[in-house]
Amino acid sequence: MKLSIKINKNLIEETENVAIVFCYIFSFYIAGPITSSLLAAFFLTIYLFLFPTKQRWMFQNFKHIFAIKILLIQLFIIGIAFLYSYTHLTFDLSYAKVMFGQTIHLIAGIVIVTYLKYQRHFDELKIEKTIVTAFFIQSIIQIIALGMPSFATLLTHFNRAEDLQEGYGGVRGLALAAGSGWSLGLSYGLTYIIFTKRYLLQKIHTKTIIIGIILLIGTFFAGRTGFVGAGLGILLFFLSKEQKTSSKFSLVFKILFLIIIFCGIFYLLFPTLADFVIDNVLPFAFEPFYKLYYGEGFSTGSTNKLGEMWQVPISLKEILIGDGLFTDPTWGYYYKRTDVGILRNLLYWGVVGYLIIIAYQLFLIHPIKHVKTISVISPRSMHLYKHMIIIYLFALEFKAMTVGFNKMTFSIIFLVSYFYFEDYHKKNGAQYAYHDYLPDIRP
Image 1 (cartoon, rainbow, N blue to C red):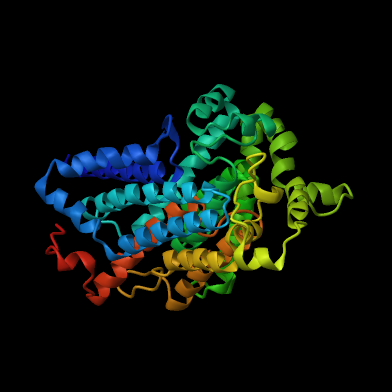
Image 2 (tube, helix red, strand yellow):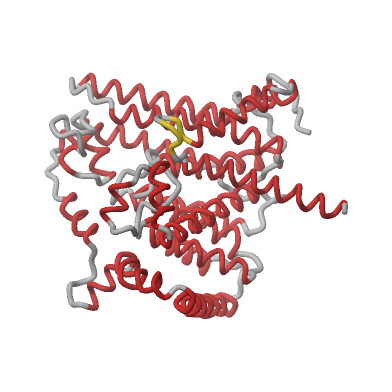
């Protein structure tokens, strides 16, 4: 009886943990500007303030040196954005508005990591597992939405992705997330790298493979960008030395076998839905291969458009100091009709401003490092893990605004880096920020 109660309690706690992380990362709309991340932070703040000891947890964490530095950098970037816009007399504050939204998201995140750290005793391994679980659930939501149009319509109240659903014939815009397009695909790719590090560099179970397959299916609806992260995750897997080479190739065959079995069962149980997937989802997910097969070259509609966006005239002056324009003042869209991250940053504030954003992104990732007492992989593999994340984010900057800008990837990296920072300094007995103000009252 006691064992049953303990199991139920653990299940409830795990469900709550995943729900909190899910609400924070995907930050879906509730009403007006209110999102799930703000609502989660609001309720957790009320809960923490009900108890004097837990109030002190929050006061401690708002003096946390890593969080304070992020906040100061964000405010500095907002200030620089104002300066550039007013110096150029463009008064374009669209970048500052995005960064201000990220700052609000950071404040909500500090409340959330306070709860997870003290109430749930999270560490780097647990936060990585919870992030993967959140994306697994998101994949299930998208799969259900694909088969139930009424549910997909209901989701539009929370993702506001009606145009995306209509534009892609019900294949995209199926997630319970504020950003169901580029942001979601980008974040799936980042999660693949986390999934590889957390699950595939240790003893691998059939359950792990199934989770990976479901994540892969979720990417079909999120966007092909996620496959770039999947590719880097595979590269991390093969470059690491935790698994024997024979085990790695054995895993590949197991995955292929399970995919074949899954597809066969799916087609037998849901023939109509399977036909829809074959006719609509697969052509979108594997568009370059379809085009290659039909003699149209290895390309997609988005890569063709991306090629056009790179054909933007840019002067030496713009490279050095920018134009102070992030959004076109005449039609309210991307300045010079390009969404390429590198070009938009250079056109806005030139190379100096862009270097500040790059430094900010690298600072966010910096705490990810090997912690001897907790890490389950080698220092070499941890080094590879960290650099795969960096490579992924900077590679996608060649397509759209990514580095230091995207809120969903910021959410993931902040959660991961915060607990790596905690675990590293705990292991080394380092004293930082809040220890100068209050004693450690961790239960």
